[in-house]
Amino acid sequence: MKAERNDLVVKVPAITLGFWVIKILATTLGETGGDAVSMSMDLGYLVGTVIFMVIFLGAVILQVKAKQFHPFLYWTTIVASTTVGTTLADYATRSIGIGYAGGSVLLLSLLAGTMIVWHRDSGRIDISTIDTPKSESYYWLTIMFSQTLGTALGDWTADTAGLGYLGAAAIFGALLLLVVALNYATRLSRTLLFWAAFVLTRPLGAVVGDFLDKPVAQGGLEFSRYLATGVLLAAIIFLIVMLPQRAAAKGH
Image 1 (cartoon, helix red, strand yellow):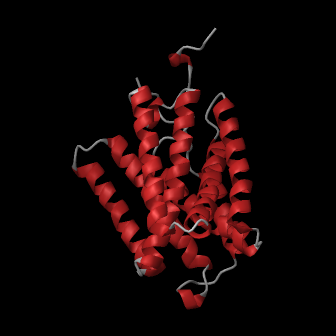
Image 2 (tube, one colour; image 1 turned 60 degrees about the horizontal axis):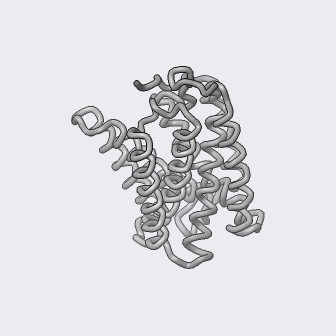
C-alpha cells in the first residue's frame, strides 16, 4: 500500500548557522576537489564531470532510498553536487566555449525552470515539504543546477569582471549578509531567501577555492589542490560530528 504523506520523513537538515558553515566549506571543497581531478590529474573537464556525476547520482539514489535523515549521507551528496558543478561549469564555459556569461545565463535558466516546474507540480518548494521521492528529486536537481551556476558566476566575477578572487569573495559575502539582514528585517518569503543564500554560497566557495589553489601570479595562494581538499574535507567531517545535526521539521 502506498505510504501516506504523514508517514514520510524529511531527510534534509534543519537550517542552522552550522548548516551554512558546512555548506560554504563544502562548496569550497567542490572547487578544489573538482580542479584536482580535472586539472591536477589532467583528466579534463568532461571525464571529471562523468566521474563526479556518477558519484552524485549514486549518492542521490541512496539519499532518496534512505528511511531517515543521515547527516553523512546528506553532506556526501552535497559535496558530490559541488564537485560535479565545478567540472560541469568548466566544461560548459571553457570546453564548449559559451563563456562565463553564456554559461551563467544558461544555468540560471535551467535553475529557474526547475524551480518553476517543481512549484507548479507540488505547490511548495520549501525544505519542510521535501518528504517524497518526487520532491527529493526536484530538490537535488535544483541543487545541482545551483552549484553549477555558482561556479560559473564565481569565475565570471573574479576573471571576466576583473575583481579577482578576494574582490569576488567580498561581493558574494556582502550579498549573503544582505540576505541575512532581509531575513531578520523584512517579511520576504523565507523560502526565497533560503534559495538565494543557497545559490550565493556556491560562488563564494568557488572563488575562495580558487584563491587557495590558483598560482600566486593569478592572485591565488598556490596551495596544493590535494592538500586544500583534504583539509576542507577534514573540517567538514569534524563539524558534522561536533555540531548538532537534525532533520528539518515537517511542513503541513
